Each structure stands twice: as C-alpha cells, then as structure tokens.
Image (cartoon, rainbow, N blue to C red; front, side, top):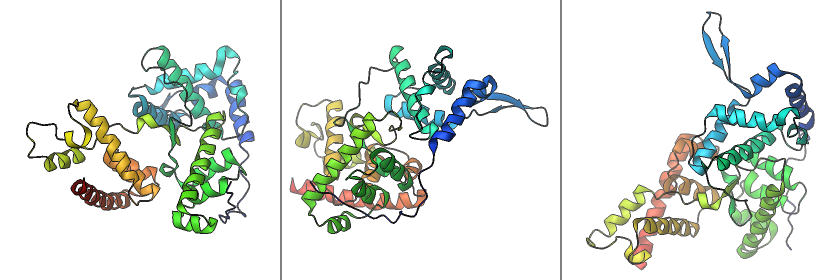
Length: 338
C-alpha cells in the first residue's frame, strides 16, 4: 500500500473554525424566537423610507436557490422556493420538538449541514408526491467525485473535514487543492502511472465512502450520480458526424460506428458513451476534461462552467476553444483509422 506525505505549505494557517458555537447560536435563536424563525425560513414584506413595500429575502435564500437549481438539474423538476422553505421548516420543527435541529453536532458549518437536510427532505417529499421516482441510495459505484468543479478552498475543506489525517489526504490535496500536474505528483511519490492511477482510485473511493457515511457534511455539490453525466449530445458533434457521413442518404449516419437498426434514442446514448470514452483517452488534465465534457457533451452554459472551475468567462471560452480544436483533430484522426 502506497502512502504519501505531502506538504502543501499550509502548516501555519489558523486552526479550523469552531462551527459548533456559531451553529448552536442559530439553533437557540430558532427555538427561542418565532419572529427570528419566520425571517430565517421565509421572505418577509418590509416597507422602505418612501412607504413602498418590498420583499426581504430570508436567511436561507441562497441555500434555497441553489437547491432549486440542483433539483432542476438532477431530476428535471421545478420546485418553488416557498415550498422548499415550508418543507425545511416542518422537517426541523418536528411538531414543536425541533428534533432534527438537535441532531446538529457542529462538525461542519450550520448551513452546510442545513443544505443536506433540506435536500433530503425535499427529495423525500417529491417522491411521496410522485413528482420524481424513488432515486434509491447513493453508493461508491453509482457516484463520481466532482471536486474539480469546486474551488481549491472548498476542496481543502472537504478533504480536511471528511478524511482528516487519512493516508490518502496528501494525495487528494496535491490533486484537487494544489492542482499539481500528474507527472509532478508521480515524481514526488516515486511511482509510475499505473501505481498512480491505482492509488488515486483508492483515495477517491475512500473519500466517497466517507462522504456517503457522513451525516454532517453536505456532499451534493461534490458527489454526483453517474447516471446524470450522459444528459445530451452536443449538436456540434452531431453536425460534424453527419457531414462525415453525408454520402449515406438511406442509412443511419452512425450505423457503421454504433451498429445497425438503432433508434434515435439508442444512437443518442451510444454517441454520448463514445464521447465520454474517447475524451477519457486524450492526454488532458482532469480539469480540461471536465471543462470540455461540461460544455460540449452536457451543454452547460459557459458562465456556469467558469464559476465551477473558479475562472472568469474569458479564460473559460479560450480554454474550451483550444480543447475543442484538439478534440476535433483527434476524433478525425480516429475516424480515418477506424
């Protein structure tokens, strides 16, 4: 078993924040004050100096907006913000016992804990109403880490809080916090590519397992279902492929690659599988591969991807353009060969 001790230069940083004291203050205020409770969960009407009425956002407004976005992305359902507030309030209030609030132990920030509670409660409510099918439990096998879509600071919090002093923490820190090239990490560890990939997989599985067992840490941003990867095929890819097959008028344009007699849906699924498999073999960094897949395969807006990788829009557009040019060149070479 390979272990790695990695010095990321953060020895002198201040100790992790004491989440417990801050969280307990929120818990106390929610239990003690109905006015505070109302302003915490629900938007309120206020009057400005000119006597005009306007809506003041509640304290969970940001959390609520992110959850609404995630539910639309993951399950294709539109949930009203007020419904999120109501469901979360009822879940925590527990008919006056505040039993759910009593389970907060301070191992993460109060709002990180609250976001996980909120998602579980809303998803359960949607399942009971029949708006979404029972999604089942997440496992190491049906999930993937999406750490490269988070900022290095967020990755550090995740790794430190969830794994602590685990033998894999150093490797994951080098990859996702410091974003070091694979070659540099391999040299530091004194291993080859095969050993690196094996150790990386074990490290990521260790983190996924810890996240799945955690009741304190909110993992929805960083642990995503593999089923949600293959959402759509880029129209750009379809157009290019169609042009390559322009002489095949009476046949499915993808039949030579994917097989004959396929329905449009079967072609779509196989095309997406091809894109993921092909891009996994290109000599790209994990971040570049993530950027290209999010933009080209999944059709995510550039400003959203730029935010996910903690870069500005101009940088993202330039990077994606270069990656796309490399992909087109590689896939055309593959086409000639096959």
